[in-house]
Image (tube, rainbow, N blue to C red; front, side):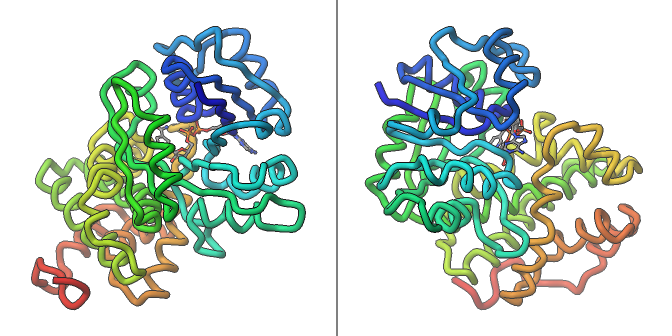
Length: 341
Ligand SMILES: NC(=O)c1ccc[n+]([C@@H]2O[C@H](COP(=O)([O-])OP(=O)(O)OC[C@H]3O[C@@H](n4cnc5c(N)ncnc54)[C@H](O)[C@@H]3O)[C@@H](O)[C@H]2O)c1
């Protein structure tokens, strides 16, 4: 039995909390929202996961000190925009050498840091722990399915392979199969960027386009993510793996995906603001857009789908017109030119 502290009681944090509890661990969940802790601990239900019963053994706390102290693993499960502020609050209580797992997917706009880079930066400040061991856990994993024990695979990524293997052991059970990968940058980049492509796929569906367009956007979408990733020094095979194409497929083809759902609403003519409101939870693809554009610019990589999604979401370009501009781009060779063979 491992002692696991989970920061964040949203959909993913709670689905993992239940899974880790039923697989025999001692789990304590903290949320920044006190009312959320009151409601979860009394109703034993999560509003976005109506089919999931929260086991009696799963405990809750309003104290960030208590959730951080004496744990084998700390799991950061807050949306990407809250990772830095949550790490700052946790900093005084995190032990030296602590294994920390992040499941949020995103890139910070100004620094262009991945989530574990934010954690390293924020926890590394004065008064913080020394030598934390950071792992990113990412893959094709809808909380709604993990919450009801449907078979799932995921990647435990870290430069510290001992830590990745430890997390692999703890998170593996009869419904969750965990792979390790040392290319943490590629894993985290994929997790953030696929949300932007999924928004684009949703827009295409909302416009009434079919499976051919969806397959084209998924395939050319992973091609542009890989082009960026390889230029940044990532392993090209990561993008063909579970955290790469695997996660993009699940995000771009499922109605569980808020990025896909928000895109569909935009494709049908809803404003991006209203689409986010209607989906009602974080739409990480919208949050990741500015950083995606900046990375493309910094590394001088062509990312036409990302740019088209941005033109629709942030520049008021009509969705149909934007798709037409993608179709009319100069003709290309499908194979990568120049970055790898
Ligand atoms: N939902 C999934 O299936 C899934 C799967 C894999 C990865 N993820 C990633 O996990 C992250 C969290 O996703 P989610 O689905 O749990 O999101 P969510 O919208 O359900 O999360 C909302 C939660 O965030 C926390 N929160 C709200 N305001 C906060 C604040 N000011 N400070 C700190 N915490 C605050 C609260 O606990 C709240 O319940 C995202 O980055 C997402 O991409 C989600």
